Length: 168
Image (cartoon, rainbow, N blue to C red; front, side):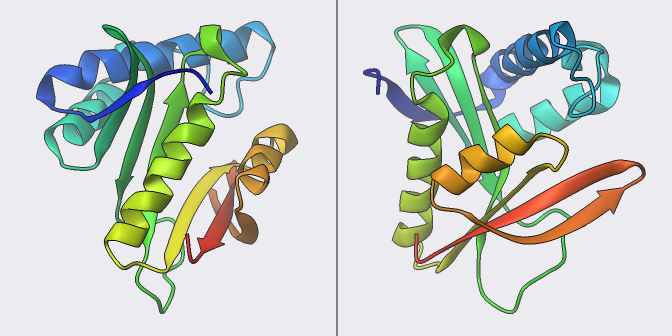
């Protein structure tokens, strides 16, 4: 894994989060994979800009940096409403995105390891995440990080896969 710094994000970091999502959308679109996040940059969608602002204003945003450059973002918090609740306390990975220019360097894995540490430190026994079910390599990535498939959902025509890590 590269030598990265991890830090808590803040309101000034919303633009960096949007830039990471814009980069990911461009990368996916170039490969004809628009089912995950569409083809329009997040920075041009009012709802996505509002979401990034909300994440940056909250206490769940963590950023991976290489010098002054943000190369990954993690948002942890509460389960989103489209995912079925569980009877246990949990920490939820609300968002995870990394620079596609740095793909294969373990940045996402490092951020997920940080999420697991946050769950342990909080005494929470379950870490969950969801992702687009239409991308088997993405689901496999999470499984490779110690998550197991635990449910699914649909929002409109978008199918999601829920994954769970117990005793993170």
